Image 1 (spheres, rainbow, N blue to C red):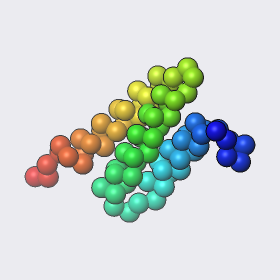
Image 2: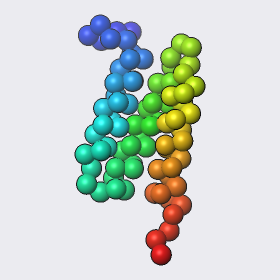
Image 3: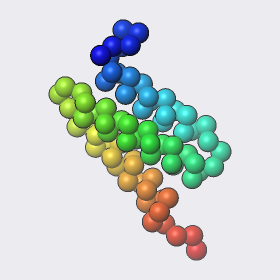
Image 4: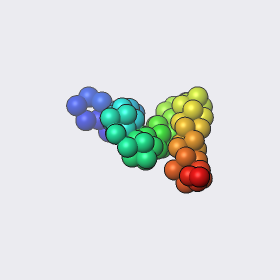
Length: 78
């Protein structure tokens, strides 16, 4: 499926890129981590959709997602 001559898989990549980019415009660190996490998940999905799948994209964005989760959920303020 193509839209404007761009495949659906590429659109997932563009959406992931835009989401991660937009996350860095957030003033709140928590909002940044939430939006960035969504972008990371989109990148993981994109990496899986590629043929062949892209292990570096999947590993990197899974790690960033886990770091974001750690700071959002796991780290308690003293």
